[in-house]
Image (cartoon, rainbow, N blue to C red; front, side, top):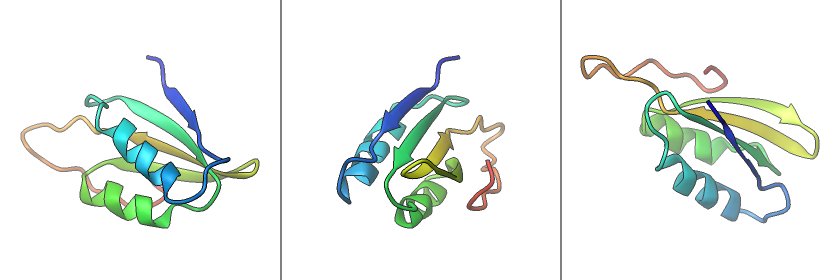
Length: 86
C-alpha cells in the first residue's frame, strides 16, 4: 500500500490543518497518510479523535510528522484512541 505524504511545513496556519482534513476525507478503512507540519497539531488531533481517526505524532526536521489512519471498523465498534498512539 502506498502512503501519501503531504509536506505542509512551509504553510501558515490554518492551511496545513485544512489540507490534512481534506485529504483525510478520501481515506478508505485501513489507509493512512503522513503529513509534515510546521507546528504541533493539537487542534487537528482533537478533530481527528472526534472523527474516529487514529493518529501518531513525532518530532521531525523543521516541525512534526503526523501519521493518520482511518481504522477498519468491525461490527460498528469504534476503536479506542489516544493522542500519540496509532
